[in-house]
Image (cartoon, rainbow, N blue to C red):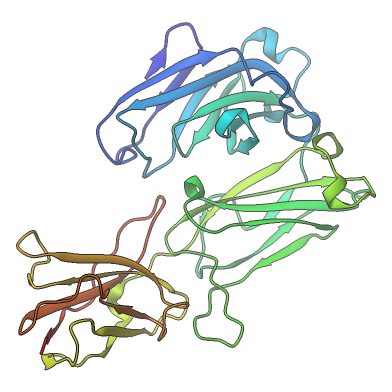
Length: 344
C-alpha cells in the first residue's frame, strides 16, 4: 500500500500477516517534541504511523520503501539515513534495519517487525563495520560469535541482540571496548545452563561505540556514535528428537493430576508446547490442555503437571504430545509422537 504524496509504500510479503486486517499508513511530521535521535543524530521531519483494525501481529518482516526528497538528501550520505520505531508513549527511539534500495533515486527500505510508529533520522557518523556473521545468514547452531571493528579512539561499546518483534529474551550490554562477543548456544541440563536463543527466529544485532570515559550509566544519547545493524537467523528444529520419559505408553497413572515428562536429544531446545486431551485428534471434542513450558525451570526438568484446579476425569483415556516452541517469525514445527495413558 502507498499513501498518496508521502513518497512511501508499505510492502507485506506473503504470509506476513497472522490474520486479515485493514491496514492504514499515514505520514506524520516527525518524532514527539523533546525526543532525541539515536547517537546524536537528527530527525528529518518525516515519520509514519501504521495501524491495523483489528490489531494484528506480523509473522514475517514487512518494510516501508521511502523515497527521500532532494531537500532531505542535500549535503547528506544516503547510507547514513536510518529508520527507528517509537516505543510506547513516544519513546524510546529504537533503530531498525534500514537498507539502501536505489542509490540514484534515493530510496530506502525501513524494515518493520510490528505495526507501530516509525521515524526517519540522519546518523551523524557511520557505526563500526560489522565483520561476522554475514547479514541475513542462517546459523548452523543457535549461537554465534559477533565480530566488529571498533574505531581506534573508542572506549566503550553497546551491543544489543533483539529477537523478531521482541518476542523472546535478548542481549543489551555496555562494556569497555572489545571487538568480539560470544552469543552462547543453549545447553540444557549443564551445571551453568544458558537459556537465551530460541530456534528458527530472526534476530537483529547492533553495535555502537563512544569515546567518552565516564561510566556506562552516566552516558547520554549524544555521547554515542551511530549504530551499525545486521541480522541473523537461528536454525530450525523438529520434534523428532523428543522422546517420552514418563508415564509409559498405555499405562494407568496413579493420579488425576499426573506429571508428564520427556527428554530431548537436542540440548539446545528448552522451550516447549504441550497438549493433553481425551480427544486423540486434539480437537474440540474434549477439553484441551495446551500449555507453554520452559523445560529448564520445571520440576522435574522437561515436564508438565496437570493443574490441581483442572484434574483429569477418573477412568479416562488421555493422549499427549510435545513440540519445540517456535515464535516470532519462525515456522511452527510438527508434534512429537502421541503417547496415551489411563487415569485411575
